[in-house]
Amino acid sequence: MLFRQCAMVAAAVLLVACSDPKAASKQNFKVAVQKYLDAAYPKCYLFANFPETFEWDLTNLRPKLDAMVKIGLVSVKIEPREERDMFGKKNNRSMPTYRLTEEGKKYFNTNAGKSIAGKPMGAFCFGKAAVNDIKQFTEPSDMLGVRVSQVSYTYKVSDLPVWVNSPEIQKAIPEFMADAKSQNTPVSRSEMVILTNNGWVHQALYKK
Image: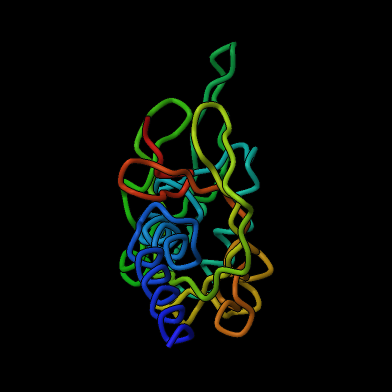
């Protein structure tokens, strides 16, 4: 009888813990991380504005665009450009101009972010991420006036275009590799979650 009562009490405590969104638990942290992944994906890569003409490639963008040309998402054309020097003399130069193809437009978001100057920037955006496992988390502690826990987790990415598996693309744009291989090798992250009045939230979504 006593054993049965203890078991019932333990079950009740467990039920309360599971239903409390403020409890430090794998389930609550999984919910918090998944909300972050839902906001972070579709993920955007290779920020550029087309047509893109290069005089100086300070960000090493051209090799990445050349790889996109090879798989048909971007086209390139060498176009003449007339310039005048400080003495008014004409100089003819040829520079590559990159443009999106119809296939490339399927994956391109023209307003994916902002440049340093605050102007809209486009990028190739795709993918859907899902938490694979909450590996571990630290005992919640106080930091800068909030309650926090460091959570280590893994996730997998689906709904990726077939071309991200191209060796040429992965060599030129290694940012694709972790997501492309995540079905067999889940992506690992360790980030902070913060306790709020409504439960735990990922650090990237926390608002004071």
